[in-house]
Amino acid sequence: MEDAVLQCTRLRKRFGGLFAVDGVDLSLLKGAISLIIGPNGSGKSSLINLISGFYIPDEGRIMLNGWDITTLPSHERFRIGIFRSFQNAQLFPSLTVLQNLIMAAGPLRGEKILSAILGRDWPAEEERLAKKAFRVIELLGLAHLSDQPASNLSGGQMKLVELGRAIMSGAQIVLLDEPTAGLNPVIAEKILQYIKTVASDFGITFLIVEHRLDLAMKYVDNVYAMFGGRIIAEGKPEYILSLPEVIESYLGERQA
Image (cartoon, rainbow, N blue to C red; front, side, top):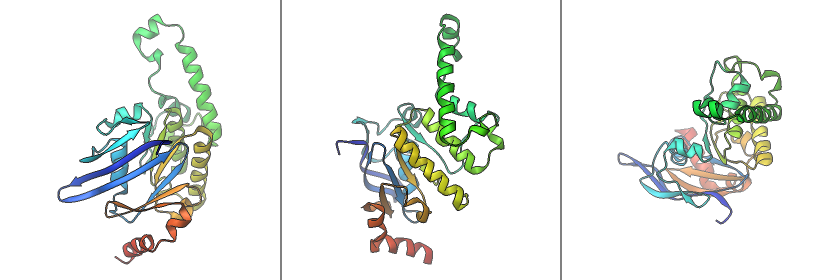
């Protein structure tokens, strides 16, 4: 697909005699929000781990903007624009909201000894990043918490700060694993609304693993349904929810 930011082709990952991911093809478009659904053990998190570089596939290819990143380690994928979040937000608890966002932009030139001694423009760089961070904080409704340490935040607020860190990092693609886990429906919906805003305003591509379909389906552009390590269906939310094989896979989990 020519306008795909990221493409996965025939990805396979085996653990012992079991394929956690078995021949997956997937394409992510710029600024689109894609959702991966499926019962527990269907391969959703393993696929996220392959795309983020925490796992290396046994077979298949992962392409980012036409560049083969299949064997690139996770820290290098972060550097080139793939941001991975986890169910529990990974923040610096003693740093403020503002500091957490600025840190996500990477090392400042002023933090490098030689540049600090020889260069005169690093304070301007810090000022630029601070201004950007304040814009992101305003966008995410966190202005009243900018000087609060992350340890004082609620679970939902931590999720928003992590979303802000993704923006500050310059991410092209954000991989979210259960972004509404543990949140009440009102806060969960607010998180999804902010994700939609960020995708639209910044052109960031999202791939989300989420079980709360009643909430998530309203905010996504495309859905991949997984079962047994394979993609069993792909399409618009309303289409996916109408498919008997998708319904059966969820019902099977609930009855097990």
